Image 1 (cartoon, rainbow, N blue to C red):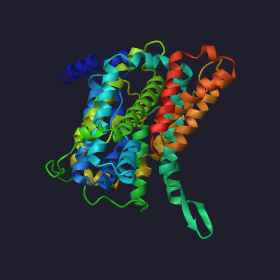
Image 2: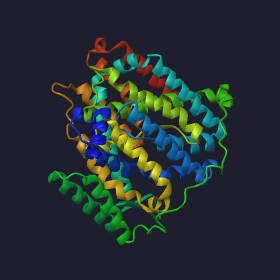
Image 3: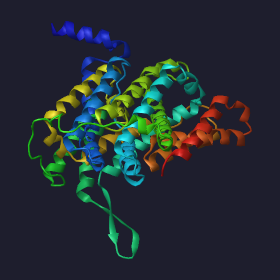
Image 4: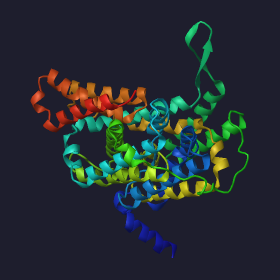
Amino acid sequence: MLLRIRDRIDRFFGISARSSSVRTEITAGATTYLSLVYIIVVNPAILAAAGVPAGAAILATIASACLGTLLMGFYANRPFAVAPFMGQNALSVYLLSGELHYPWPVVMGATLVAGLLFTAFMLSGLWRPYVLAIPESIMRACARGLGLFIAFIGYTQSGVVVRMAVAGSPQGMTVINPVNLLILVASFAVIGAMMIRKIPGGIIAGILTAAALAFLLGTAPLPPAIVAPPPSPFDYVYSIDAGGALAISALPIVVMLFLLTLFDSSATILGLSISAGLADPVQDPGGVRRPFLCNALSMVFSPVAGTSTAGMYLESAAGLSEGGRTGLTAVVVAALLAASLFFLPLLGAIPPAATSPALIVIGLLMLLPLRQRQGATIQEFLAAFVIMVTMSLTHDVGLGLCAGFIVYPLFMAAAGKVREVHAGTWCLTAISLVFLVVRPY
């Protein structure tokens, strides 16, 4: 009986065809889940600044993540997880709703309208010339840029280096935290040893090791409980002002959210697909259509659920590093996210530093083939460098890709190869400049 079920699952997702196994896909799903579970705590904390109650914010976060991830698993058959973007969440809450004083329902309405535009963009077929207009070297650079960005995030949240305020020094000084350094090195060693010995589950083991050490050494408090009833879905009534989002004053927000999500989606989907060998956007641009459409539909649903834009998550690279290659990985992630509703006290106690060694290792793995291809030119290397550094230092994947679109044709022109730049690439350069203008800072 179990064998028959496994065979049906294998055929449905094409697991054997992608040189994977059901066990590998389940392990990969659990790995991705542990890498991104922090959003269940962090995202609601950000939404609280916009007046969203904690319980409602948790439900919105999990609901948007589950639906988008299930779409990615069953429709796109890709091992990618979907969840609310942390960067866009902070931008929507603290900048748009906070400093610029747009009402939260208007911000949610703008997200909905931008999501509908993104969906229309995908269904209309305009996505194909857009993908074809992206230079191959830029696509390859996205994979390397994401690797550097993921590793950078890991080091940032490891807590090894902290800034201390010192009188007379406005910038402060950096101090090494020896306990956090011990946790990072120990969990990094666990992951590395298991990878060298080719033992599956190294990323999971590293995350659990880091969390256990954090509890034992007192850098993170023990959870007050393991299981608790989920929050009530009736504590908060969501409000979306789509009409207000169509006002002239709000149109720049709609344009900005559309372009930001388009660039974020492009960098993440193209980068991870190329890194995992799941699609070649140059030879087969249709291979990325379904993940793009899943992102668009997730963006439509996220404000309905009560949170900011949801889309494909960088932490999906964790599951890819464990061999996940089909939609079963995504389905496992969605199932674990849904089950999280009953384990919120435990999950809330896991420190961000627990995932830092895993992210560092994943980023390094994506950086291994740093030389993109034989015969790559200096202008391609320069454009790739701009993308990688901008993604990491700004903590904005979409902004990194935007910078690449701008400098690539300029470098090609400097090399005397302006005629080799696709007309569509110039259009992307113009769109990127528009994005920089409408993006609030």
